[in-house]
Length: 280
Length: 263
Image (tube, rainbow over all chains, first blue to last red; front, side, top):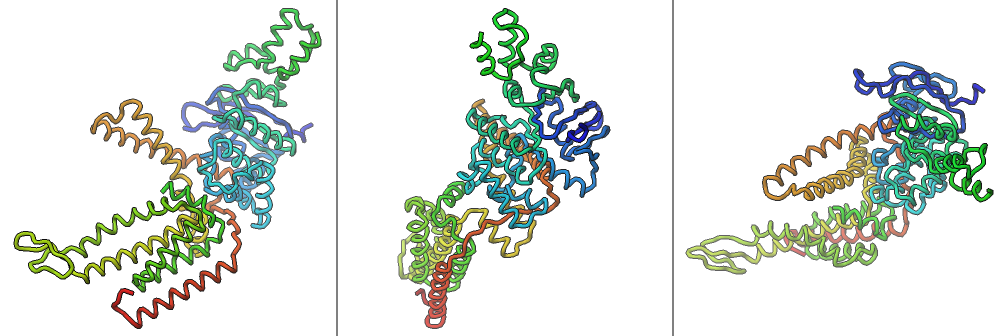
């Protein structure tokens, strides 16, 4: 079983100002290879800080971090190889996209991990195709919409063929249509066997999509497990100010009122609940 | 500047190899300035207008409006060549003003006309380049011409982030206006100052975030990117060589035959 763990964090501490407050305050987690994990918790709880640790940008002051069973080392060679294996899609694409040309932007990471220009060109074309960027590949970055910029920033990372992709609030400030597009692209990543970590505030999406939910609170993971289990814990949700997913809320109330028979599995989404109801 | 940036992405000549466009523009520009010929200036003006408007597909009126901008500056600065204050009237025109005349000579007028046409022809060469070539392509030309890497990278980042800066500045200005931040001179000045401050702070934050994001993709000091392959067209190269040969021939002819003349 140990081989299946791709990320293991043991008691990490990290502080941005080295003095008072710790952004990571004894952060521990184990993530299985190929799984989909949603990180939930208030802004400033430590999700993004942990993500930057996974990529070696932030170096924890205490604790140990293993990727693929190897402890992280912070010399240049190890860092470069780590960053090739763990990709981060940042929350604000404008902080990530540095080139005015979509093609050049995507090629950056590919060339940095040592591809030859010909290989990189091929990889870039492939990613542009997979992530449906072709319609705007010749447009300048500054004229793209928020959703299109997000697509390019996912391509930035996917082109490096990482084992783990982290998306920091991928749906932040996207309209529903682009949120749907980004969600569909995320599913494509999962289908390629990539371990995907997402931070999100959307409980319904997390419930339906994730294999595991990690609830982060004041620099610690205070709950980790299947969505049905985590989201049924009313006390936990109250403590972290999370809303209960609509499907669970309705399911619990219907079960309590005796409309639904006891002993049904917690539904992952509203359509499963709908099926329960129509089966009565 | 933003209009020019939008137009070049719509130009039909956008995908033509940027090297071809660059050399056409620069050599023509140099020949214009060397020959100083009025006839050649007019020819180049027409040629660039045809290339940009007819072939590039940029709207004629818009092109003319863009050309007017430098023309206004030129006219103002050539006034000094045309108008003299003198005790004696010169041959072209003279307006008596007490004991002196506001006056000008035919030679002065011709010199001014020649200056304006040469300058406008040169400007049209640069317009041809910037209205039909995207900034990323121009940066690529610089890279191929062995411009220092540092300058290339700065051009890339500045071009990318200038639009973000403008956007933020515009938003801040709107929110200041919404709260009467510009009701009189005093508040306008202090609002403008505050905006400058915030832009600076935001830029610092953004540069740090950008650096992190680049590091996350294995950045180690050099910005490696691919270049677009724009096919070199044999036909274009031949046409450019032919055109420049004619212009060069004409320049030599003018210099040998009529060194001081205007044709």
